[in-house]
Length: 316
Image (tube, rainbow, N blue to C red; front, side, top):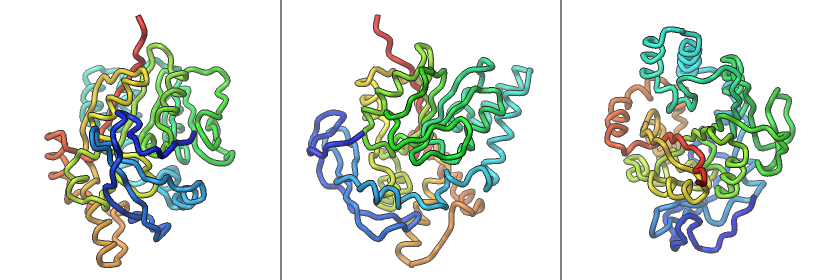
């Protein structure tokens, strides 16, 4: 999958104008500055020019969070795992609704509240396979995809690009892209592949940062959701709906949520300005300190993250 930097927005065709310059504030893998351009019409953001393959490979260090979830489960991951297991194991519908509602399972975790046992799922951008293992433990027929050389994880497909993978004719009841879509070099080509992999009544559940958020506006280049240079594109709640519709998808629901966007963005800013090493990812107290504000912003639909439930747009 390749993107041609032709100065036009891939969603609406609008002009892409220079917006800001930033670098890797989170993992500090490089001191290079990258430029972000923004569409003057729909607000799509894009790193221009795209980082090279070598730059992208170096941008994902061994300590990158999604590569270390199996063996380094934090408190939030343990709560997530327990709540999903309780929900799927429980036979009491009232309790199931209470657990799923309290934890926002469909939206926050990217897994449905209910499912038919044996349903098939594909987790695109699965990292170390944590969620694939979790889904299989809950009786999903779960598979994953991750960019890179062939690894040792069971039921995970590896390749340099999603469109190069041979899934053996499998189709999926659920395709999950949990904070991986913004990493894709060619979003349109990615959506074409996903559409071909989904069953007619299947779901695509995705989560992406929201560039029309308080955190994105206030923190600019330090905003966690921009995560330069790993996040190649930046979406808002308007342009991503348009992009999905143009690629034969229908958005069923959007849920606005913030958990650590403000805490992490403040950490990025402090670490850069004062040359400190504040680790927000390992500091639950720091995250909890900002939760009341995060929840308020989510209620106002100006949160730093969006979770989106999508179906195929079937032709009549």
